[in-house]
Length: 117
Length: 110
Image 1: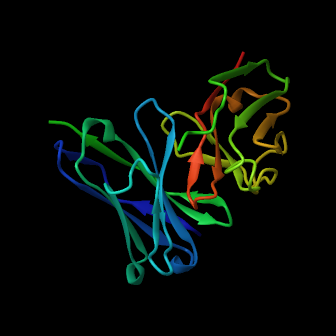
Image 2: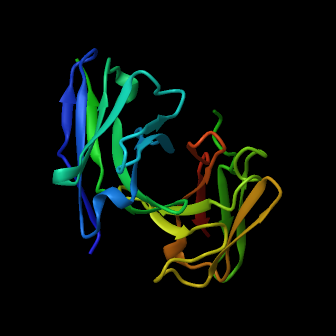
């Protein structure tokens, strides 16, 4: 069965970086894109960016362009999302999700990132 | 890149029908049939309810249906049940190869 398992919660200082992983299983990793979505406490869903797991191309929301990096390790079926220059407003649950023909059909369990001094 | 516009809240009594709108532009909702709807209960992962405007994943009750007209997509819940109380989000593919979510709608069952 398809599963996306994310890394555990993180607590970071302002200005630091955080890297969240998303391990896929139950399907061929390189056949489906991985998207990243975040949700701040009490707020809505916010789309961040995605990676083509075949050729590694990425695309980001303008809001995150230059501050977010998405990479992959195809041999391990893992996608990574790194946010730099963290600020308190980046405190959120970060989700990865598999994309198939316009649909985010399977989601990871979410990773809480807390930015606090 | 603005979020798609949804009403902040919609309510209805058990058994009634409600409709949630999702308004975008000719660059997203109006341009593609890649509109999805997600249900999210407190502290849970979003659950896919409708994809590609009108399609229901396996296991989603047929009380949930989707449609689209021009730049506005809609989710209708017929025969509202207490378990339908949750937040609902629409999403759409955009012509710049990105995605966008709606602002979210809180559904209350009276």
